[in-house]
Each structure stands twice: as C-alpha cells, then as structure tokens.
Image 1 (tube, rainbow, N blue to C red):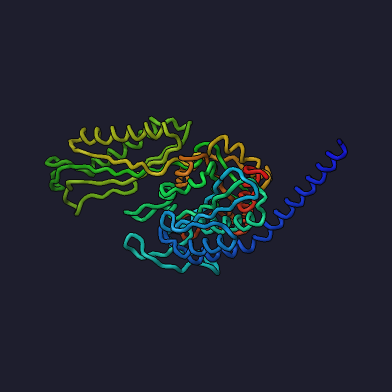
Image 2: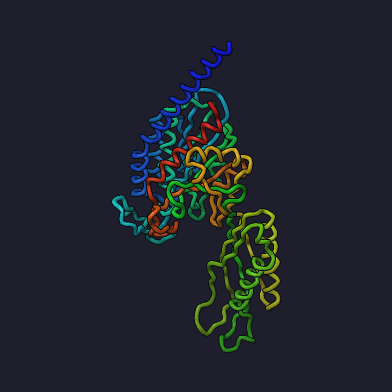
Length: 422
C-alpha cells in the first residue's frame, strides 16, 4: 500500500511539474504578442469614456479565446469570463484602458500622433500612465490561462474605462462598473490589479498592506467680500487677502493637527480666481484644490477642520466663505489578509529579493472603489530601464521598458493558480 501511494505521489508530482513547465513555456511564448499589443494601444490611444476601438480590440481577442464576453459596461468597458475545469471561487483581474490629454515627446516608432479635444481645447492623446501596458498584460494573461485552465473556479477579466476620470457631467470608471453589476453574476470574492511604474526598475514588484494609494477629494471654496477701489482697501473687504489667510490656515491643519507619523496627508490649492484689473478690489474669489489622505479617521478630521477653518477665518476678516468637499475617490486599501495570502505568489513570480515592501503614495486610483466592496490587492510592476533615469507619469516624456511586462503576466497567472487551486 505504501509503495502504491509513493508511486501515485511520484506520478502526481511529475504531472504537476509538466503542467508548470507548459505554463512557463506559454508565458514565455506570449511575450512578443504582449509587446505587439502594447504598441498598438500606445499608437492608438483614446480618452476616458471614448475608448471605442480599444474595447473593440479587447473584446475581439477575448472572444477568440472562447470566453463569454460582455461589452458596453460603464459605456466602453469589457468583461470576459473564463471558467476553470472545476467549480470553485470567483476572482477578478482588472486592467484600466484609457489614455490622457498629453502630447507625446518620446521618439519611438509607435509614438502617438493622435489629436483630440479635451475641455474645449485641442490636445494630443497619449498613454502617459501605462494603461496600454495594463491592457496588453491582461490580454496575455487571458490567453495563457485559456490554454491552462486547470484551476478550480472562474476568472472575471475586467477591462475598465475612465480610470483617469470621466469627462465633466458624465459618469464612468470603476464606480459606474460596480453600479452596473460587474462584481455580480457570478459574485466576485476578491480582485487583483497592478500598475506599471516608471520609477521602479524592471524585474521588481512593490507592494504595501493597508493604505497604499491615497483617497482623493476635490474641494471648492467661495469667498464673498466687498468691492472697492484698489487705492482705498479700508472701504471694502478684500476676498484675495482673505483667500491668502484661508490657504495659510489650511496648511496649518496638515502641519499642526495631522498625526503624520501615522500616515501622510496633503491639502493643495491648485487654482484661485478673482478680480478683473489691477486697481479694483474684487467682490469674490474662488479656489479649487485637492485633499489626499491614507487613513479614514484622518480624512474625517481633516474635512471637519477645513469646514470650520474656512468659515471662521473669513468671518474674522469681515468676509463670508463656503466650502464644498466632494466624496471623491476612496483609499486604495490592500486587505491585510489578502496581501499576506498573495505575497508568496509574487515571490514565486519575481523572486523574493525582487518583491519590495514600499511606502504609500499620495496619488489616487479608482481601483479603490472595487476594494470598498470586496477584498482587493493592488501592486506595482517595475517598468523603468535599469540603465536610465526614471520618467514621471502623466508627462509627455513618460517611458516604459516593455521587457518588464512579462513579469506582470507571470505574477497574475501565479496569483490565479495559488488562489483558486487545481
């Protein structure tokens, strides 16, 4: 009996080894296709909620793999359903698909020459944040897993539009996909996503449990003063001067009231509008800005103190002011238990020395809307050439080393098999 058991164990081990060899071979074999797809999407970028040709190409690919495919979710989103050979859990993999109103300066053969209109202005369009690589990686994962579906469960491939935000007056992005039921039928129990980074060397992966990217809220402040001649400020109430005091006061919330050893927090006034000419003290001033937080208790306190301070400072200078703070994008929060469960998969894919615990960043990601509903894990994939300086995201000079994308395919594939089992 013991000999038979040992023999069966040996056979099973050989079969598992063969299966892993086939999987590794298929992943290596998809690399050139992933690069080809990435270059196509890079050369043909489309803005948020306008990703028509992008979604068409994605859907065509998923259908060619025999998947059940849904289109038109949240306007231009695509969802593919891949079932394993056994029944089991349902997980989702997500890739964002939209580009930015940025005119490319990088001199590559597949450089974007696309022009479009954004907020009434003509602009270039560029994948200046790497979403083209996310699409290509996910298409590669879909093809590899469609050939190696010896897992127990189902995968939803979510190709999400408008991560950079829908145009004014429109809904879009992860929030709208959720409203339209993307996490239902079948119900998803965990979701995984990645973002390529031009700041991390190729071959490396970084992650952080808990708050990994910030909540992003927009705010608007309106200050009501009293117009007067610029030569006689004592006859009026200067809303520009009051605005300066408000801005100074807001920064004191960060420097004196936030426990910054806990998590980072940022208040930025990005725009102030007031006045018509040099010698008139205007009647009103308006400010627009952003708030970034990585802890919900800190966010509540910060929002409350902003509301108190804006109205109180204005009153102290004989003006009136109102502040409106939008709910915005939630914290990209990596569920600690799911993070711990996923970490060994990243180690297998990249090697332990190449998986790096990182600090939080104050950029925002609407993957966080999915994480509000179900446990989610979001990590960063190295895309910086090892021999070159990093480039900034959302700029005309953004550049990614394409050789780093195959690690993304490997990581997602490993996560699927380790989570779902066989």
